[in-house]
Each structure stands twice: as structure tokens, then as C-alpha cells.
Image (cartoon, rainbow, N blue to C red; front, side, top):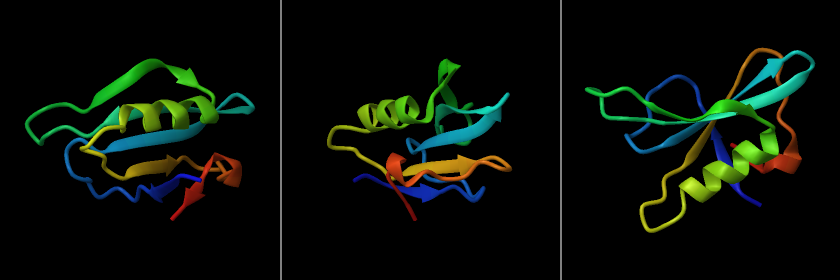
Length: 89
């Protein structure tokens, strides 16, 4: 089971991934962004909403390799974490 860290607003190191889960209608959706250096804008991919499971899988795939960083989760108001998505610290 993968471990994720709650994003609390403090900027993680450049290269870190943040998955934001939010409500879209009556469903939970997510998008991923990669934290950039202070002089650049963060990268967002893809530009469309994803189901939570797909967002988690995509973030894990983008975070593979020797330069892995923690993956952070931002839960918008009213979104509850589902333990099936992984472990949230």
C-alpha cells in the first residue's frame, strides 16, 4: 500500500507531486501538479478531471525512478479520504 502525505499549504521541494481531490457535482475528481522552482509556474497534468484511483496511479507512475519524492494530497472541503486509495499521513 502506498503512503501519501497531507498537503497543508507549505510548498514542498520542487519536483514534488500534489494530487488535489475535489467535488465535481456529486463525484470526487482529482488533478495532479508538479511543484516547480519559485521562478516558474507549477506543471499541471493532465488538464482534465480524473477519478481518484486514476489520479493516484498516474502520480505513482510519474514519480517512479531514482528521483522519487513524497506524493502529497490536498483534500478540498468535504472530500473524505478513502483508505482504498492508500495510506494518508
